[in-house]
Length: 355
Image 1: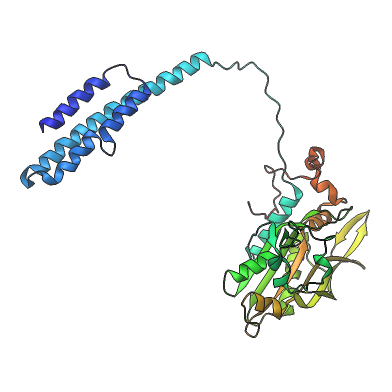
Image 2 (image 1 turned 180 degrees about the horizontal axis):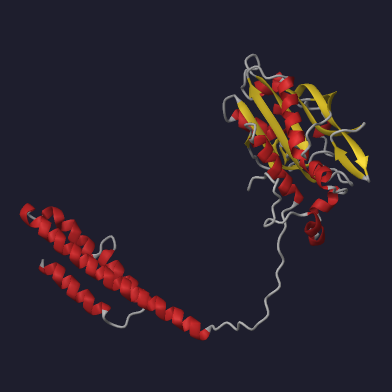
């Protein structure tokens, strides 16, 4: 017990001195650190006779509590002193005019990605992501794209090495490949993200955004695909009904494949989605090719499913009346201020997810 009292008296005397923050923290470490003096006293507990152990522990805890209280008091005194010094030396002139500031806006592409993610999440899809730099296998071979396919040519694809083993992904379908290789069916995912192709005009850009969808399970067919897309298009464009048609097409990774058109009409120079005698191509889709399933170790005799790909930028242009894709990426604050979305003024019908 004499050692405990000696420690207490020694450090209470030190703490009564005019100490700075560094000195107090040093004392705290000397007492309560891993090999501190009070900590070492607790380690002696096992060697104390059983009849004396309870009193020893009680007295030691009293000393510990007393020293800790003194240290905390000294720390608060220093903190209060520092605050008072700042108040004296850093006075704010409240008569100064307020500083100008610019409020940021949510980019239309980010807005649409959130809307798409929210709509598909309501029918059981999860959101998956993958790298922008892909290998040739995930981007082409695994997706049943033959070596002589035009999409592999340099004028379409940004290759990153002479051997053409690595590239900037030309679609987000490699995320589907990665997801299926990394798990077991069923799969029900969407994969939004940036994609890259060597193309640039009013409606095309070298970097653009796509969302791919994939649903693999037993007994999945084209009717499930049609129902999924019908639901999405109505929810996204906020219409009660939609005219939709499937046109036969060809994609290496789906069989059968289709282009999807939706009906629209022009009113006062604006595109009105829903009814109308005009048709607008909006996406590509189809049933996943058996070769793709084999390439990702999924048995096509047990599982089948559908996939679709949608241009996010095109959806944003259609829904929000933007007529030039290039403006999306020109970082013009005036354009963003006009077409962007105020994060503090969210519409009542906004259903987006925070990302």
